Length: 220
Image (cartoon, rainbow, N blue to C red; front, side, top):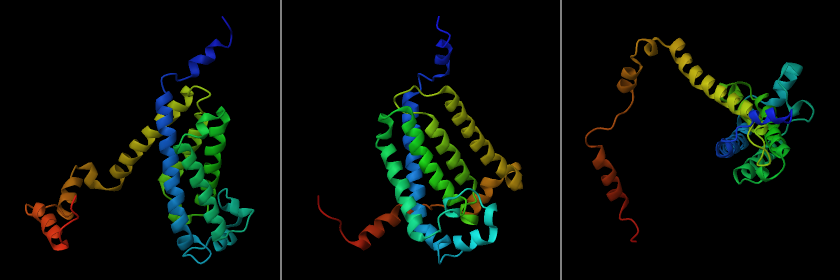
């Protein structure tokens, strides 16, 4: 028996389809994240935004997180170029193109998207200071380490993804339990139904009235 045969135990041979779904799904989320940044970042944090990145970097200096804008002066055009590159890479993964290459191809693609988005989050200040940004970055790093079709999915990376999911679900519950007594005494849904607009018995007829007000639709 070859001394390297134990390495096969580290492969998740039954997770090929799961890897494909997860990698493409996370890549699609990155596409949406870059698309949102493309449109919103210049208004919020751009050269003439509410909290301009150049002023932020001048104020905090090296205490800002890792970002390309430390070495290259920020501009809205550069920011949008980074977003466009990130969207193209994400769409390539959604279409399954990098998966056809060697194992390191996915690491290069997701690593580039991760680095671009990290550069954005590091200067995003209050607008990018939420937990889902850091979880998206962590998830993107794991996606690259899952490899391409050239290698089986690593079992260790599958375990890391499961641990990420557990932390997400547990953390989402605990932040509610710690933040508001209504979750602890099981009255949160009472407050929800008291304050949220609920459909009444005549709701089904409102749609018909609206359609009649708009006139007849096209004939098929």
